[in-house]
Image (tube, rainbow, N blue to C red; front, side, top):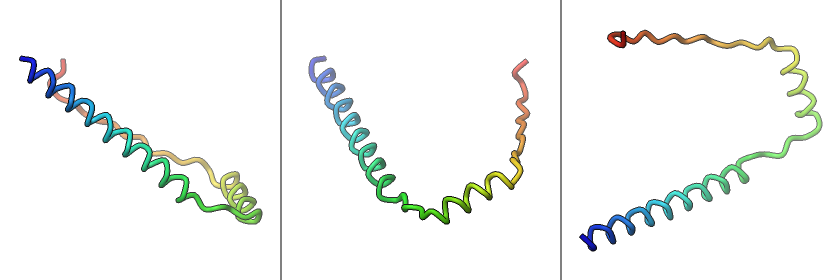
Length: 67
């Protein structure tokens, strides 16, 4: 029983370490992936967002047998 508890604790610790490492890697990738925008690109992007109408798509799902 003690070995089972120790194994469970070790597995949880390993999963936590892997999760933290992958989160740090994603943050680092996000920081390096964002290019710096120039003043003209910023002005052009704000003009486009104001001129373009907001569009969205409505999705409905049918589920059978929940009544």
